[in-house]
Image (cartoon, rainbow, N blue to C red; front, side, top):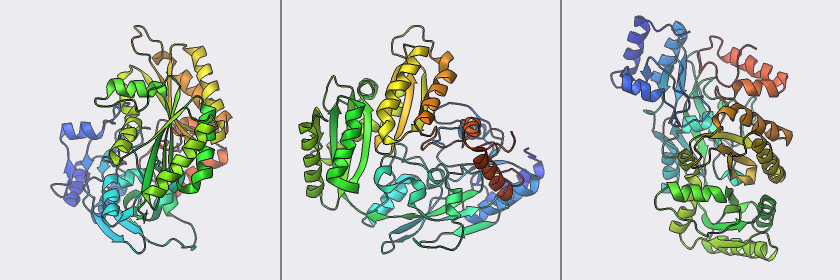
Length: 471
């Protein structure tokens, strides 16, 4: 589609100013390189608007010249959604301002290019909490997190990114700006447009700013628990919630082989409680007072050990020790690269189905490749598992890569069998677009196409992602 004429380029450069664009080959290559090096893209022009006015004028110019664009935040996506494939790249990394913080209203208005850590720090400085937390929070941007409806480790209590939104500012495909930066929690005046753009991966508009929900700061108690089965992990979640109610912030499942992988690959890490048993749980309870959170978690874990749901449990004695627990969990995706091939999936199933899903999926994969090492970890509290089939260390001749498509089909089929989803928190992008179209109801695909056609009739906004416009 891209009609990248000299006239277009001259006008774009004029709109963006000297610091707002680049044609440097190294910068273009970096913009087209996903962080996991999964599928190298290409882009002829890097636009970096510094304001909503510049972004609006640029998108209007793209519409006039039929130039397709790919919005990009921190470029930490995992489904080939923010990697350009011939489109110009519109990086939001110059738009990082905090526009407003209202302590009384518990709201923060921040521009789309700001990294997540900026929102966390701004809230903290105001004695408030912005609860979204994930491993790439120093790089991943607010706009990208909204566009993919990111989850993270605190979904169990606070919900996904969509649940943390109060309002948005969006440049529509025509170049018109929709200013919906409301701090209201109740606004029953028709379609709730902000939720249309959350999770749309830049296919319906360019997010330039957001108003986010803040929460009171909390004190945390963090536990590391050893369990003998996935069934016990699920039962442990129910027991902890019986004790702590909705103050359970995080409940992460970690397999023993992931601990071995991290401690072997990441310097200065160690297993908090070595054990031959197969599962670990990282659990966090958040309350107004630290002593209250700690006593609640201690009572829950003592009950769990008495009922034989936990073999051993450690409660962090300090923030530093809690951070060391979380460091292990957060470095699992990085340390998987120590394996040769890792076939990664982001699925969700009902919490009650997790043990059976793990059992049947591993058995099915081993029928295809009995050498595959399964690393399944993630947010068991909301049913979201990051499920990887990895090439075993030290294997001289692995067949895993040639079975990649078959293994992915097994994982996704099993997830759907148990009433789950093949995309829990990473989005759709190009990677899962066609597979999703084949398994979701035709009415859903038709509705999504109708929305895309209505808002972006020229098809310039991140084309080819999320939904194909033809069968």
